[in-house]
Image (cartoon, rainbow, N blue to C red):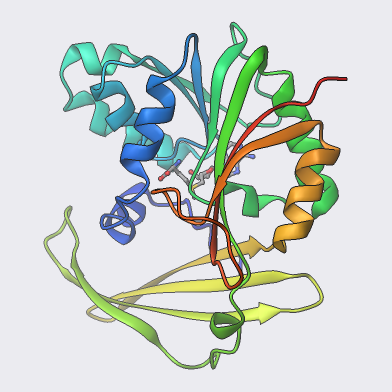
Length: 254
Ligand SMILES: C[S@@+](CC[C@H](N)C(=O)[O-])C[C@H]1O[C@@H](n2cnc3c(N)ncnc32)[C@H](O)[C@@H]1O
C-alpha cells in the first residue's frame, strides 16, 4: 500500500477527469426522473452534482474527502445562487449517512463501488443503501468490468502520457499512468504520476474488481433486482468482453 490518497487533491482530480463526460447526461436524466429526493454517494468535486443542480434538480452529495469537498464548495461559489442552493452536502462516509428524508433515487456513480474491499463489503453497502430509499426508490450505479489486457501491462512502463496546465500555478504538469494487477486480492492498482520541474506528485487508486456474475449475485443477495443493465451510458447490451457495466436497481420484494 503506497498510501497516496487519490482524493487528496480536488484540483488534480478535476484535471485528470476533465474529459470524462460520457456519463453526465445519463445521470442528469436519471436524477430528473426522481419523484423525490436525490442523493449522490461519493459526490467528489461535483463533476455530476453540479450538472444535476444546473438542470434544476435538488441533490444531496455525500462525500468523505475534505479535499474533494473543498473543491466542490469552491466550484459552487462560482455557480448561480439558484444552482448552489440546490446542492446539499453531507460531509462524511456513505456508510454512516442518514438521509433527512428517504431518497427516491440514489446515484453511486463513476466506479465508486470498486472502493468496496471485497464481496461482503459491497453486499453490506448495497444492503445499507436500501435504508436510504423509499420503497419505490432506485439506485443507479456503474462499474468497470475486469480487463485482462489492462492487467497484463508492464508495471514499470509509463502509459497514457499527457500534459496538463496546473490551473492554480500555470505550471506544465507531465503526467502518466502505471498499473499492476493483484490477482489474490482482485485489485487493480493505478498510479497517476504528475511531474512539474523537479517535483513529483502521485496518487494511487485501488480498484477492487468484480466479475459480472459476481456483481449480479452480490446485488441480488443484497436485496435488489436489476431492472436495467448496459455496457455503456447509451444502453448498449452487456455482451462477452464488455468492460463497463451500468445498472439500475430496485428493491426486491421480500
Ligand atoms: C470515483 S470518485 C467519484 C466522484 C464523483 N461522483 C464523480 O463522478 O466525479 C469516488 C468518490 O467517492 C468518495 N468516497 C470514497 N469512499 C467514500 C466513503 N466511504 N464515503 C463517502 N465518500 C467516499 C471519494 O472521496 C471520491 O470523491
